[in-house]
Length: 85
Image (tube, rainbow, N blue to C red; front, side, top):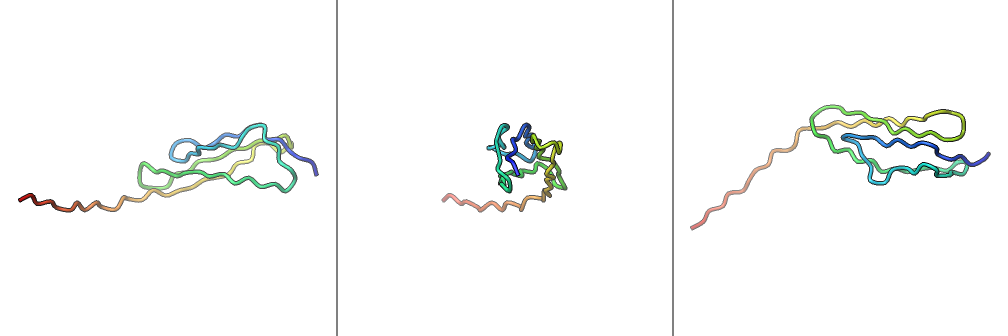
């Protein structure tokens, strides 16, 4: 087992985003794990999909992590009343 180096890391765009994308050039030891925080901020109701694509120098080609989220209707906002006397 030898370390691998990430040669390409394409973060999702649109309603899926990350403020700290995986770094290209990152070297990972065998059995290493990467945890990546991805935010889902839907702009409409329904299902949304995207992909996080990572390529390393291991000869396996691009590896895709599929992302799925479901936007739902916002809860109604009930405004309180004000009465000035």
